[in-house]
Image (cartoon, rainbow, N blue to C red; front, side, top):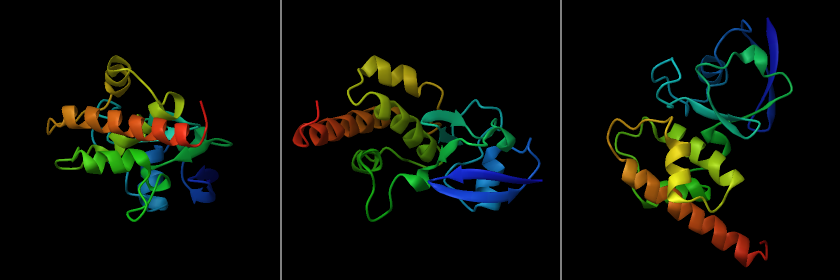
Length: 162
């Protein structure tokens, strides 16, 4: 069946069964490999993407449920040359060890900071809880989110936005 989905601001027609997980369509049909297959059960967060601004597990989301919705992946945030503030903060804090979870971590952090540029440490911890890092870099990840929050807050202040 031909399905139409919008990913990172571009419309795509894909041949897929409507029950196919979004993760498979992103990786196999659209060649967007940032979201990773971790567990396939929505328990690790390696596959986290945004749908309409909310962090979701793409391994559990059927592609047929995305008509008229907006999907954003790690590839839609920034580039190697121009990382967005969250990506830059993760780099600066060396938050990745093996790197497998990091795209999902960044996407979950971005969803939080899109809603609240000044979360408390407790809000960060609660929001990030669904995503796992098996290498144990959680403290660096938390520092990276705080750093991104500071960058975003400074950007808003210098732009005259309260």
